[in-house]
Length: 400
Image (cartoon, rainbow, N blue to C red):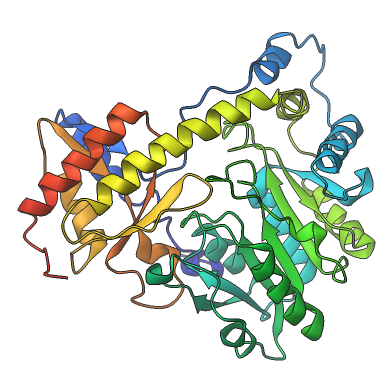
């Protein structure tokens, strides 16, 4: 039998989905499973997007331009401009999801063997994207006790070597929900400028900021316009996860011309999904106002509920719809599996994502789990109660 490629062997399994077989078994056993493991919102997709699909009268679903339909890119650029983000049509490459945008971006900016610095915990698939591009992830650890704030710049700069090519951030963050301040981003700007690095900024959760917090886009950092690469997506903004449409955005014309060649190799992003995404740009502001208010209520139910459980600590996030909680257990992955395999409270249990998979440092986050508060408020209250009872019964509970 021929051997597999080393990249295939090194490719990490998703911590978000790895416990799926246990959840399926729990459901077959008759349990209700509250899925807090994956960021699949139950919020309705905007009517404008769905109507565009329903009204589709194309006789042929043709290829688009490899960069995406020009009409969509023009409209998307105007949308950014209306938010004070200086993006032009030619700065945008439409991709098959934000994931493809980051993969294209890393392969455009980096050579195999290069290093990318990422504050951890981070979106677990960044590990997989780095493997695809042949890169080494160099983590800088943010701590739950600090609410996952950006680590001190000195701790980031000391990680820079001749092989360092980029820094990757997610703002607001997945998995923590932390929102970097303008001041934190300006600190990053200094070392990006000093060492002439790329700064990749995953800003797909920009619309979801809470308690008066305002997002500051890396595209507004002056002096490093040629270094910044923004990643965007319709998945969470419009609750359109199944519409695989993202965007790779940069003012660096050489970078964008090179990235387009990767886009040409995969021909084009999906036609129908681009039509829906373009229509979604007409979504009125009140849609987002209502969604944000709902997520604030859900966040408060989940985070306040978790913190009311003895031994559990969960900082309150300012954005996205995730939080990371520390549990009084030795191994959160074992706890998550136990919840599905052995625990039931009134026929219910909970599925979470073990946080260790969101770290690159070995054995980091072993007591932590990521929670996506994407269920309705009643189900979130039931999930919190399940966790409260579970921790009273779990045999691996610790005193800390």
